[in-house]
Length: 437
Image 1 (tube, rainbow, N blue to C red):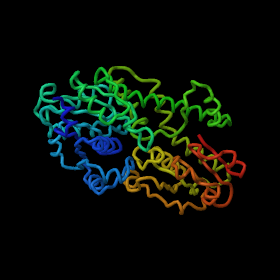
Image 2: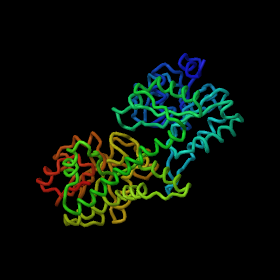
Image 3: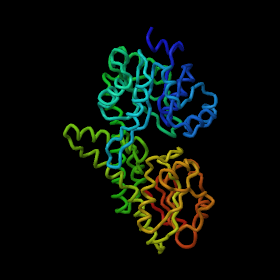
């Protein structure tokens, strides 16, 4: 009987290592389909929240967590009860943009220490081609004292979960799967088919699967960088970028990307994994790194335009009252890690401006811990010289002009609508100095 069949019949258990925005929804999804799941995370406080029926990620909701059969634990020895391990830990970059493999190395050590014969370990973390076999595999062998291919097998299936997206979910996004050999590939594919209704794509090798994932986000990054560069050019020409894109978008094959701040754990990070590996083999990336430079500078660009508009409104720049609405890396998501809004905050600080930041959707404790930012309540946003509407949260899209008027003090109202969620003409007709990417 295959490992897949044993998992399907509840004769063996499946584990999720890492219960963040990616791992937790996967654990819950498998449990809903009748699989006996162990959900492991090093963060004991997070585990206690899950056990209490609280979803701090807002990915599946409190009711789903409360009713889930997942056994949430911070005890790594519980992993010994599972035979199919899915590793879904973050893979960030260091300050110098080199890959930080610390989380995936640590997870490999934990799994290795608790690995039993006949297991399959599948990595979901985004990495450059070769990490699974060249970095993780030797750690699993060292920690377990076992031999890969004899005592256990490995595979790779890159995550495609989009935090905050309630439409594109694990179940309806086609899943790339790979394994070290045909038998492993088949087991990995069958296990994922339990939860992925859209089906799986069997990649011919682990390296192909790793490469496929890393280029998905690199492609998006380059396309957004092109839009950001167009925005800079059109702003200098006095042309509204959003209007240009709406016009161009009427052609059937025009790719509908938009300018914006590129943060988060994927699009702003993954290209550096690819370019790092390229450097290792003697190739210096040109297009990918050029796109990264443009996108990394957009927070500074927004802050500079805020200052220019303050000057145009005859407002003193130093100590100007500026509010930033939204701090998360994307809309309708509490995650503030790797947010590019902090670049706006820091750049405004160079001009002697300490902005008030409000974000009712964000994880306030996380923002305080990571950035030293304390959020203001929306009711405190008054007498402002400028307001930066930075994140397109659904709650912000309901703001009326009367609501926004109440944010400002005397004089010209400077409004920066980064994502273009408001009606430009309406605000300009009402005397606002309006700007957007």
